[in-house]
Image (cartoon, rainbow, N blue to C red; front, side):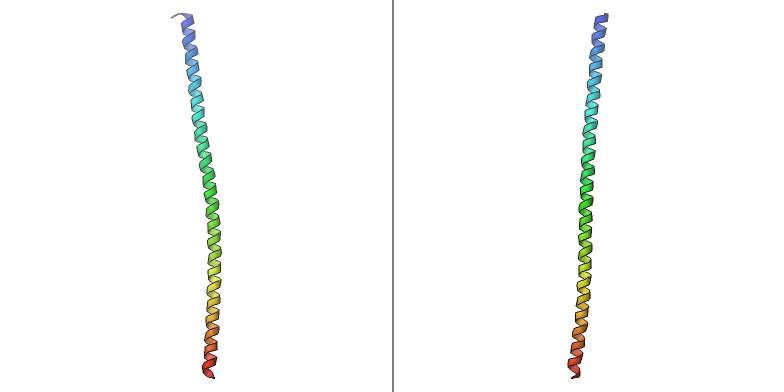
Length: 87
């Protein structure tokens, strides 16, 4: 091999190595973007779950208040019935 051919082959090999490095960087960028998108989706899901939990907690409080009011009304109705039976 001549020096000129050796230099050409070396340049070609260096070009391929650089292109391979760029492809690897592009693949890493794609993986990084996918991971960031997954993190964003997870954060959004966590936010939605938190909102759902807050809504469920409020519904539980409302149901307990309604139950308490119902029990008070039943007690009052029983007292009214007892009074009407005593007359």
